[in-house]
Image (tube, rainbow, N blue to C red; front, side):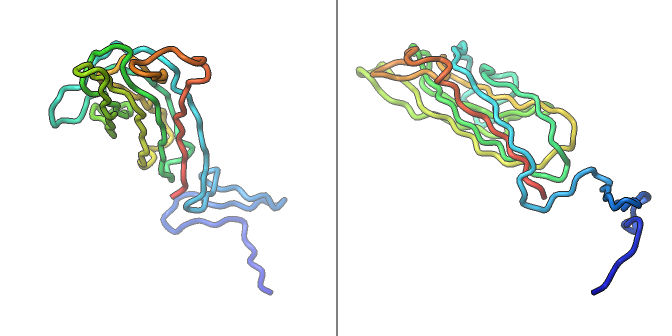
Length: 194
């Protein structure tokens, strides 16, 4: 059996010790934490509440929705634990109409510091009573991005063409059925070490 005796380890390009072993056997790591690639570092859960946005819309063109367009329905500040991770955002919510205000419903995921949407999703249209179009359905985002470091940024979701979030549809338009507290949906962020 071999023994390695040392008090610190330093990468040849580093100006400070990366790993330090003190005389009591305590190991200190320069970054404060050591993660193996692929390991879940942290999982955070937030909620999107039932609400009634005003029905603002994204332009009907081939450009990315902007962070000032549509109606904001969710906002959450977030600081990653480390710059050495990927962030996996997974969320869904129900979007639709409580009255006939549009012919299409969309949602867009944003992050502060960037005007363009990270991802855009749409709802299917359903028809009730001839020309009276009712749009409703689930919008889901599954998005991966690299950590931007350990500073705070804010995720937000904006919607287009809807006036009912996390309501239920019994027959035609959205109704306030069931408890608003029981109709929240989730927004999760997972940090996976790289």
